[in-house]
Length: 128
Picture 1 (cartoon, helix red, strand yellow):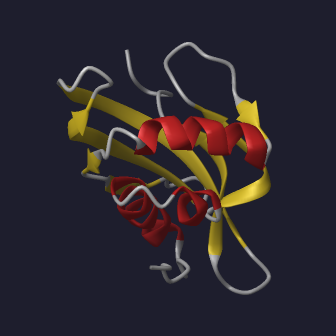
Picture 2 (picture 1 turned 60 degrees about the vertical axis):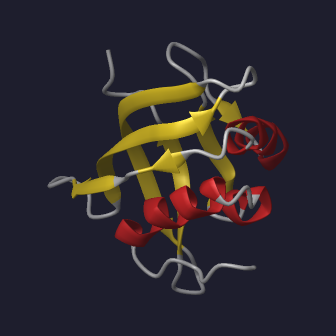
């Protein structure tokens, strides 16, 4: 099942959450710009390029995460959004339930086809 492409920055993160929950890594990856930067875990450096981002998303999607994104638009940049993601009910490698909560900072970019893509995804930017 292929997803529709987000037409606004506020639609990107819910589309990403759905794709990851359904383990549709290709659909999730399609939301990232070719030169996107993705921070996969706290205190980690950013990954760049679809190959590296795909590997990280594949690992995350394997947990079949349930994400509850809440989006709060930045007042400074119309395409920058801050949101909170709660991953609940994801399955760890040992079969245990994994719970994570983080407030992230993301920057979206409008594409030439009027859809929006992720330019920067720092899932841990505002987390302690």
